[in-house]
Image (tube, rainbow, N blue to C red; front, side, top):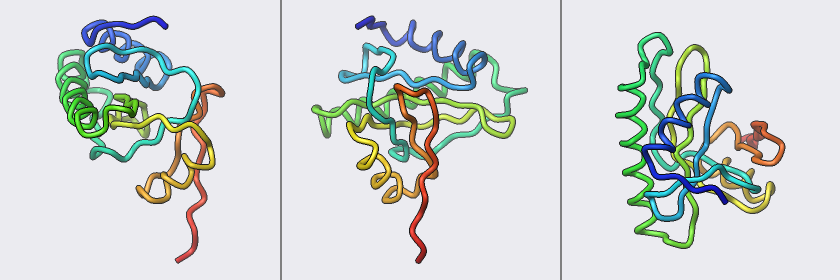
Length: 137
């Protein structure tokens, strides 16, 4: 386990978002972060923020990421046994910010996605987004 404080995590998140099209840094205390190992990340715990790539310079990214880190700390206070992440990814020319929760099984991750109205979850081991089929209503 290679933990880092939020300032280091933020720098890593910015670099990974720009170079790898996304980042997910997990925390169980809201102050130290690490790259997730295993499991499935399911978003939808906070409203997404989308910022066009051409205006999302490092200071803006920093400010928005720290706001999401505050939301993570509030979630941890309410449910200290869970692990949450500040997630970012690039989609349609924008950097997207969200808060996600680590889920142990892909089946449960898919069910939670449907409940939260999410389109996909992130498979940490395979490094891919998994699109969820939504039931017909």
